[in-house]
Length: 400
Image (cartoon, rainbow, N blue to C red; front, side, top):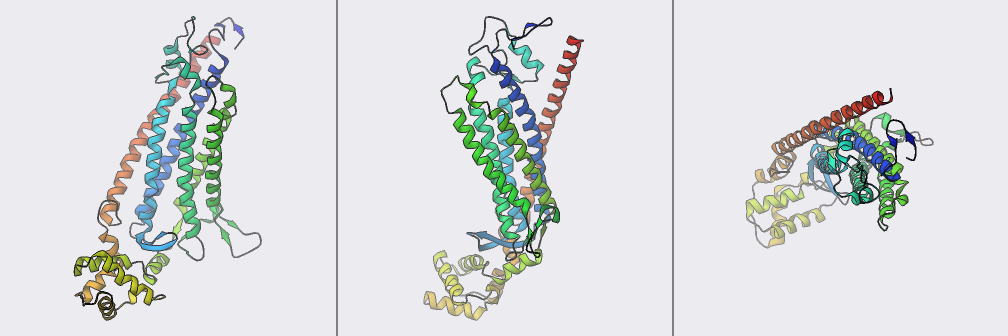
């Protein structure tokens, strides 16, 4: 910055040392965010594709790790695609904010020497200028925002990884990772450890720490950039780490296998259709839900250890009369309908439900949004590449 050259004179005239550092950081982050956005899009597409393949693959939905209601593996997976869509919206927003040039702002409030801010911004491919010269050098919120997005994305992946760790256990046996994403136990020959899932969990833990570090580093009086010097290296490194974790999850989802037989068996052997039965009593018998809930809860307690599918019409009628004090009218066919797994899946027909048409609508929505994000991101990538090439060619001519 203090050197003089024949081509441009004093390089540092009217420019603080931190200007070059800040600009370089922004350029690096801008490029890494383009690559990261494409990786997130690829994961979301893999998730949507796998969900489409398993639209009818039944399994229990779990709350508190207790079997709750019938669902499908496709519907379950698609629930993790929507947070990725929100991540992409956040990435698009911060990319827009990062695509403004800090160059030529002087020390804090400009310089008597003309810096050609707009011209420099054009050469570097920025979409405009950071309006306020002092803000251009001391922006702290973008550091926090970028790290927050990475942390949010990592935690979403970690939640999925935690679930899949449980579902891949012998007790659940719902999914199995491909061998390349697992490790054999060094001591226990029967074990196949889903190691890649634990790596993703570790990345989320790391990002929580990085977010704390970044937040603490920039929580100082303004005008003190040196306390964030380490962030210039740590944040791009963290972005690359999360990018690799997203790519790893994409590979795992593409290769993961779902045990459809086991999923159906878990639905059939428990009381997962209990809510459906209670709702059928409401719809067909005119009961209030609390009374219907009481009837089914009494049956579940009395017949613990048995499958709800073993419930016969006579037993239900007797239990209802015992709880209510009077008989209800429900046909054997209506009971059979309430305990039909396929009908239960299709009965959830409101937007967002497990019914096939609901799933098709959500899948189409996700594909459309991901297509739009991909188109915008590819345009940015091409533009930045072209501007970089043009700038290097210009530099060669100046030097040569």
